[in-house]
Image 1 (cartoon, rainbow, N blue to C red):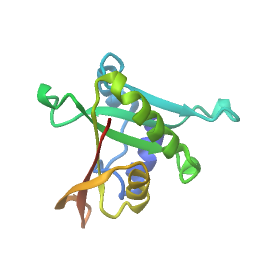
Image 2 (cartoon, rainbow, N blue to C red):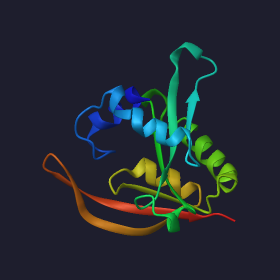
Image 3 (cartoon, helix red, strand yellow):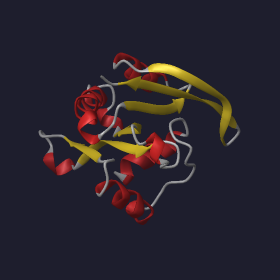
Length: 155
């Protein structure tokens, strides 16, 4: 999972992390998810089982874990570059929509850079709408990014 995330960091176009992360930096994040109503789902390639994790989707708490927001999950999807644009993101989102109510989630949200057209199209295909734009709230190197808030109410 860390390797996949670090691929995203290296693009400087998908996440606001600037430097690669270490496995130890993800330990607390992983533990927080594994014992909550906010799971992390991992995808493996059944035709290449030795490859390990090829993508993951995390259900994150929305807006700093305030209880009034618990009906909403902030989604994060990261795929190994070899598995992008091959239907894995769609599969993970379909499963998310199907299982989210069993986790007490009624609203799905995602934030992404305006320039991340592939992710925007993915979320739109799965019924997410543009709920807002945060202009120039991120800077990576000398490049400023608008962040889009996309969402979908379930049910």
